[in-house]
Each structure stands twice: as C-alpha cells, then as structure tokens.
Length: 491
Image 1 (spheres, rainbow, N blue to C red):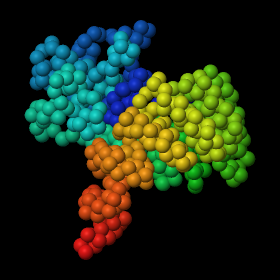
Image 2: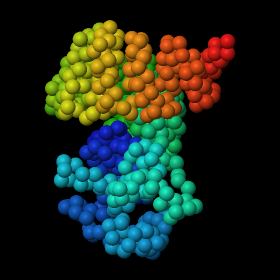
Image 3: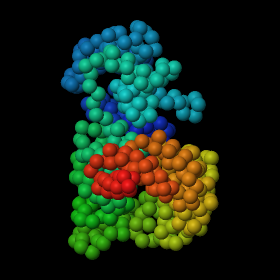
Image 4: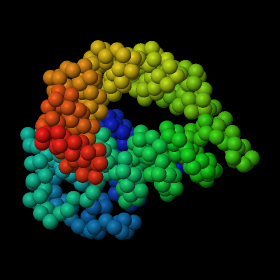
C-alpha cells in the first residue's frame, strides 16, 4: 500500500486550488485520487506505458479506448455513448476545443517549460471559479472572457443541469476565514461521497480550531479510508487527545498502514500513557524507536527535520525541538511550516527575540511565496503588538495585508491596532477594504462597529451592527449591540 511508504500531501493553499486543481508543483497522485476514474478502478497503466510512462495513444484516441459506444465491461458505470461528436464537446471537429484534455485535463506550466496536465479529469465548473477564484477550462482558452460568461454559456447548453455540491465551497470557506468554516469542515470529513484527499484536507484544517474540533475529528479516526484516518490522527498532535487515547492506540496496530501508525504515534507523544496495558506500552515504545530512527536517517531533508522537531516538541523536549527546527530552516530557508513552528514554540517558552527574528527573516525573504510571507508578517505583527512595539507592528501588518489580502484576520487585527492608536482614517481604509473583500466576515464587521463607537458615530456603528445581525441572526451578541445602539440613537 502506498501509505506504507509515504503520506501524500493534501489540498493545501499554494499547492492546490480550493477545488482541488493543481497549483504548485505537486505529484499527479494528488489530483488523480480525486477523480471518478480512480474510484472506478482506472490505473496509470490504462493510459501510460509502464516502462517509458509515454501515452499509449496520442490525442483523443486515448480517451476513446473506454469512452465510446461499447465501453469495457470492467467499467459498468461508464455511460455508453459517442463522445467524439460536436453534440458532446460543443466545438468544431478536430479543433482545440474538441480535444478531451482541453476541457477535462487543463494544464499548469512549471519552470516555464514543463506543462503538466491535471489528472482529476474534472467536468468544467466555471461556477466554482466564480465562487473560489480557481481557474476553469473554459477560460484557459477563452482568455478574453470572464468566468461568469462561461457560466452563462454552460447554462445555455445544459439548461436543466443542476450543479452538484463540491468540496471547493467548504475549503474556500476555511481559506476565507468564514465563521461557519469549522462546522462545514466537520460535515465534509464525514461525507464519504467526496474524495478521501478532500476529507483528509478537512481533518488537516480542523486541527487549527483547537479542542472545539475534537468531535468532528473523532469520526475521522474510524473512517474506512486510511488517508482520512491518518490526517485525523495527526490532527490530535495539535489539540488535546482527550478521551480519544484508546482509539489512537488502536491505530498503532499492525493492521494499519505505516502512515496511520506514524500519525497516531505523533498524536500520542507527550500524552499520559500510564493507563496503557503492558502490551500496548511495548507496542508504543517499539514504534517510537523505529519512527525516530527513520526520521534521523532522513535528516538531510528539511521536511524530515521538521517532523522530528514536531515529535520532540510534543514529547516535551523543547530545546531539542528548537534545534531541529533551526536545522530544518538551515536546509531550506523557504520551508515556512518550520519557521512558523519555531517562532510559535519560541514564543511559548518566552524566547520572544528568537520568535521575532525567525518571523522577520521569513517575512522579508522574497524567495518565500507571497501567501506564506504575508502569513509570517501577520504572525510577526501579533508578537510585536504583545511586546509593545506598535510602530513596527503597523508596518508588518501593512506588508501582511499587501501579500495576503485573502486573510480577513489581517484586516481585523490591523484595524483594531489602528483604532487603539486613534488613526481613524487609516483604520477606516483597512477595515473598509477588508469588508469589501470579505463582506460577511463577522470579525471585520465587529471591528467597524467598534471603530465608529470610538469615534462617537453611533448611527454608522448601528448600521454595521445591523449588518452583523442580518448575517448572523442567531448571534446574541449582535442582537444586544443592535438593541443598545438603537436605544442610544433614539434619544
């Protein structure tokens, strides 16, 4: 099994778009596992020569091996039809638009000269492009048109077609920091009709919500898909294990893939294991020794140093963990997860200078992707505020906002600091832009309520409070604020 050799990366920002299309330079495996073809039993060897990896047939003929009026018996759910006609592809015969790959396998070019096709074999969904900003096949050719134009064209072609739910909406909700993101991720992790890699992504994201996400993550520990079990177990390395200890111990069993065992082991590091049986404790110690030996044998790789550091941190070996995070960054200074982890741990143990130095270096490095740099600048801003260094914090917030405008928390925290310093015009600019980019963000709206209260502008404050209540009608805080402001403005 593949998971005995490696743990595949999931659909993280900068690696994949929210709808799962390739973005960064990733392995084909991640997109292929999202496809209906992979679920139906198609393998690499159906299309590629096993020795050269070349295509067996060039052009549309490769797809027509199966997608034809008499499909192979091994794919009973494949609809028998003539797909190589204009009625299906809606383009002139033999044109670029009539090529299967141009609608169902768009490409991304890496290193200027290396175009690679997305292997999720997806149906074009320009509506998802509108909702999430992901690319779509239609506009990869019709570059002078908008995604909304493409939505209209498909509506004309297929007026009775209903767009099925897609995990993209949930992943985008998390990326945009929407208030209901945790609950939506909790639903996604249990939605077995979605690809395992998307549900494993939900588990990875749920870990960022702390202990509140334990209920959802527990269900992932029992999932039939080992990838979901692995990422659900790994999430408990970031949050308290709670009453899930016995379940995690069961994932150390010999019947589990190595990746699942490793993630469960990481979650159990530092936990109270005094209640384990002698056999369970022996199993844990054996796997612990093997895991650390493997990490040490791979210590020339930045990612392995990072994993080793994480394990040491969870085991309570703080100084050793800091040293390994630093060595990880020595091997690859652009590896942002190690930089974030080092700064976080340093801050937790009172080494604020190290935390700021680590974040400052990353936020100023142009070798690091802008989204990562923006996040590092945002974290630096928060540390600087805690240390009372507001002047540098404001500069860092401005950089974070420029590099990572998709994160509404940047505008929220930046705006609050500006309000605290009574920089009213600047605060209105930042929070106004934040609201324009994220019109339903609760925190940004609340910050605008606070801003206008501080300025004595009760009517403007009431307007934003009413907007909060309109968007979140069950929120008691919004209701109370509206009532108080209505009473104050009626005098």
